[in-house]
Image (cartoon, rainbow, N blue to C red):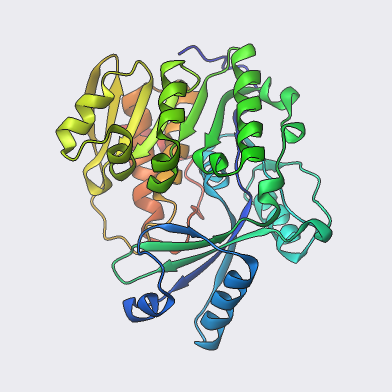
Length: 338
């Protein structure tokens, strides 16, 4: 994988622009809400409003932050000392304005014209965190699904070392086409495309499509966790999963919780150890890991050192509430890789 290190941006990312509403709850309330624990469920605007009203009536504290899988990854790149550009669709409502300002304050360049409220509301995701640090998500996609090919900024992609795409975009034909347009531009300009599977249910629905893109090398770098890898390989045993993934020529990163991550390249795999911590909230761990790896690769570190950066930053984010890092880690990178 050849990178042009003279580019303005380390990474250009696209995804669903979503305002995260983070709240700690107990398992009893989660059972009352009837959402599948540990997974993301799509919700209508009415269902989302009902859930938010239920939480408010319980007088539980809600923390609001700009989010979405790819956006969290872009924020990680900036917190590590890199430079990122993000494209996602928001509405001209209070949530949309909050999202725009919050992302810019996090250091991510974000230049997308908001849609009028006639088109709908800015996407929201209620993130329910239980005492075991597991996160369960209810997502109303709002206008985020109105991202189109016309929103993809070729001039910015040309100034970027790596492109990053989230698998959630495959859930809607219009956003999927925007992702495919991004891949087309990147390949034309010989820019590596990194891709995250995002969630097991996304892999279940689009396994064959993802498989074909891997075979065609549309994805130079792929991120997944073991659960997603299980759906993709249709294997149960961890060793069988990793051996199946060795068949691909792409650079693959498979996160394995506290064990760390597998790096699979050139038909070989290596387990890069993680950092033992007591998790408070696992929301965004995979997104943060991907951001650490992309920062490493875009700054000339090899795949193992980049994986170490990803492991460390992921271990940091699971110790706080929310899906994104709050501190600057640029001065810690050298210590991490050593």
